[in-house]
Length: 368
Image 1 (cartoon, helix red, strand yellow):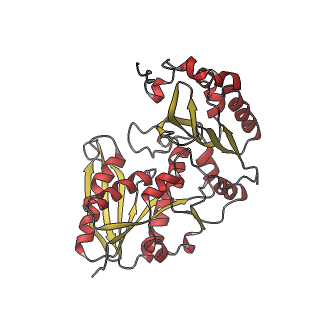
Image 2 (cartoon, helix red, strand yellow; image 1 turned 90 degrees about the vertical axis):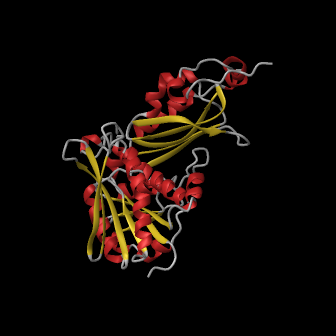
Image 3 (cartoon, rainbow, N blue to C red; image 1 turned 135 degrees about the horizontal axis):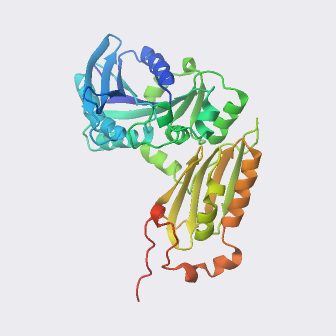
């Protein structure tokens, strides 16, 4: 019989073969553990379905199908995962569970949902570890290339327009440990060194994983949220190696809204991984997030500056020097000048800035 709550390890990948290799290697070391695997399959009548398979060292325990009725695989997985894990916990037969996520699924979202269920006492378990596994042979192209998940047949729904790099970046950022299948080529190894947050542990080879240590760990959702805050991101590596560079573009000045619109392609496109924050004179209290990978860029509001000093800070990693120069020039051009900043509050207060489609409506000044 199990003692204590069920220890849960999340496994995230962006390649089906990598997922199968990793889950097999981990399952062999789980001992009295169980694997809970979710994958997308074609339904008998056309609609896609999510198949959940629970298995242990003796074989398949049970399989269930859920229709993807609202077009969101991540939501379907989360909604079905909690009751499945609770059933596993109630049996008392297994001490741990390896949750093998669908290819491309966001590990952070699943972890948040599980932690909420644990906090609400709807799940007798604990989050032990979040693990991401990558193929070093394809890493550079996966992370910095412009391929879409849909082009590889890996989209999680018909509305999933994410790039491969976008999905991979999210998995790497939210992992406690990132594992490469084997020794990476120098450029791939350097790229990982540049893009991984300092808190993320790196392991070369599945055979080097200590499954006992994974199960004994503690995946802290709150700490993860804090370290991923765009205004607080730390850089792991500044040194240029093997053609991989990281540049930190930092200023207390805001972006000029119109120049940002005019030059967003120069600043945000290309084979780079970019993340950070910025602020606008039209929205002086809003922390705006900048998150791009493989030519796709996402911006939005993620809170308020409160007691923090307002900053425009982008951390950009790439392998092309021409792209680096173009981004550095665009960054300088888009910033307000010292003169513009001194009069920005009066000029932009309550005015449309053209960014409503991404950031919502500009707040009007309070009367009186």
